Length: 242
Image (cartoon, rainbow, N blue to C red; front, side, top):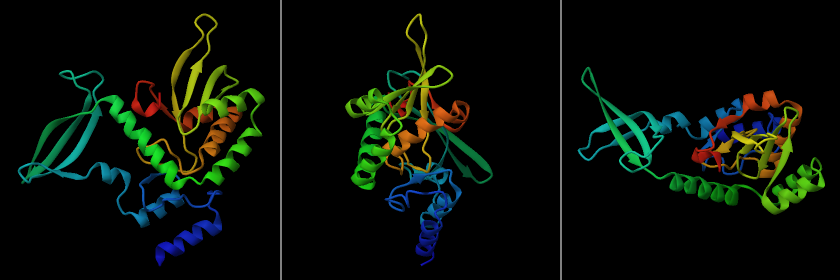
């Protein structure tokens, strides 16, 4: 009953979530920096994202290990891509640590994100909502940008700084610094969700065209603010969407 009353309160007061509550809330893990929504997610699922990543794992001998620091290798190790994970456990007053290498090719990791995005968009984004969001987005675009969006799910916008942004549906935005000599250099991918997103996907809780509109308006209003708020992802990372 407490959770339902919290849901009603959040919807009625419209605490910054003007689109209503995210669909799939409580069913799929959602990441957000918006405090009222974060508190609601905590009520629905006591495990935070950090706690999920730090869950204990059980080895073949039955010992429980806690996942500590982890990182992706920058180049193949013994011919394999993957992630290095530090496991630790307490034995009395002593802390025992060990290193594990979890092989995973970048293409497989990218495929996981693509499939996760597809599933979340299919399950939680209403077609009618996306149609309305696209109509609103098109009011801000010129004819060429509309044609780009219809045919390729993305469009280009050049900011006051001269940086060109390729804003894409259900993918991070690509920033490119234009250069008269070589045509330009790709800088990074900029990932930003105005309300929240489904973990391990590119799917936000807003319709994709609403999120594209958010990127566009922030770029036009203040590129400095946009860069400060967005996650800057190297293009060789699977999460860049390239």
